[in-house]
Image (cartoon, rainbow, N blue to C red; front, side, top):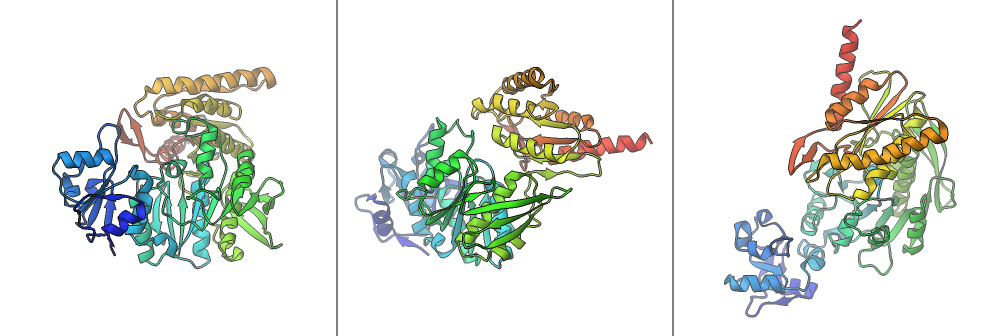
Length: 514
């Protein structure tokens, strides 16, 4: 499959360099020169933080590309270098990259049913639920998200929650060629703001919720909301055909007002088009509830994932499936055994207390996880918490505060410090935790123990040693991640492995004492 350079230029509103052959066929496109193995490729040269991508156009595999897509600055760089290949010039390469990639790969998203999930928390879980439910209903499903990409259940390596446009469109083509009928995709605010999903046709967009996060990228919560709204507003070129919006929070209710052709979803008793109710929680945390549909249909759901927020996630997933015409009963049957790596993931080595690893790394998510654990244990509650470096610093204190307001022991440790001083990050989290702990003591007399343990492995070990029969502990922040980024170096670190090791040492020590 290929497209003449002249047609591509016309599609994206570009200008073809004088004397260029308009009949050159383009079959591939890429931002990274190392990814271009196809000689029929066009290299997309975009301006970078320190150097323009056009500087790399004559290096590595980019040198074998038959044409270059760039802006005026990039075209000038190529001209000075004496590059004689055809150049397509546009004002902003990133703004047209999605449309160009889609066109080159044959607009594959239009040949499958696409469901996009966005929001602050719950994207990954909702996507997993959609994948499993659609497979149970007899469809071949592709999944693109935080924990990776899968085609019909098989892993495909990717790096970003929402890949760059060329990678994304190539994935769509790969999925289409392998018989995928439905694609479930997490759509981040970064992807919407940077146009990574431009040129993609979504049948349904789904909104989970909005809370403080990514304020290092978005200057305000309003800007963050507006980025998400690009996926829903009728006048947005990125909007899906239809939408489902969870209105459990005020941001969701606002999104429902601006969304085109939206069905509202509620799990907290509010009036909505699709609602969840009659929730029963078993001793193991398994939840049974009913979902009421607009046509007076009622679907029973069994969910292994604990927490009220997962009732909301499952209801939203079922609503999205309903909007694309999937049999709700068949879809619901697929939800019963869904587990999500690092999302309320239980680590059980036979200990007499509850141990959980969760990805919660923003204030609202930390609160939700601790509230869920509090409802499941009769004893005390302990948490290991940290915050990432080079990210929104304003959420660090609130994360500590949310922890101290709910837990009996808060151990503040390192997450991914990145290039920041870890002690500075911990100090901000500790300040929020201590302030909240003081308030708890004054207002209710409840004593909260606050510790600082910089080494994350030691913090996890200390938490497991503290726990006793009937307690609950949670290691929050990294979830499924298997690396810790410190001063530019990624070290292998998996919270789940560390919890298992700590539990194993504790249980072994206990057996030796008998």
